[in-house]
Amino acid sequence: MEHSNQALLIIDMINNFQFDHGPILAKQAEDISLNIFALKKKLKTIGVPIIYVNDHYDLWQADYQKIADKCKNNLSEKIIHTIYPEDDEFFLIKPKHSAFFGTALNTLLYNLQIKEVIITGIAGNICVLFTANDAYMRGYQITIPADCIASNEEEDNMFALKMMKHTLKAKIVNSENI
Image (cartoon, rainbow, N blue to C red; front, side):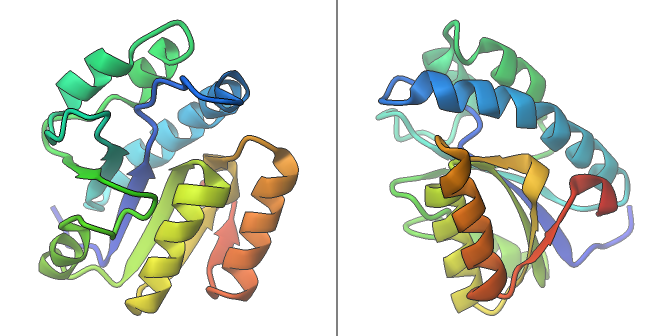
């Protein structure tokens, strides 16, 4: 497998959606899950590492099976089934909004010799935005496939994309163009 200097980050897609506006976000997450899956499949064939970074749901174990089992419900089941991690992919848990805060992500990216992160997942205006900010602060190039992130409100998602483009110098693209 050839070496890539890119990594695909999949943020918080294994989710229980048990919060205010959870059902709204679940519907949008279901819509983007197919785009993320297609992008993951395409990038994986060219050697791009796939890295899930997910909330831990008070389990505090980087065990995607346990987290998926705990999150499975009517809102999340289809999404989890579509986007389920494979054994050769990385899975990290995060304690807060950014995928970098309190995790081994930066060390992993360094060891994989990554220069560019492609960030997908939910919520675009919170965890994706904060992860992009921390990636920018660490000198990574950032690509955001706009059809692979979602927020509770479309307006918030558009604002987050605008912030990432203008402030964090992120390349905003459609996933088909990656």
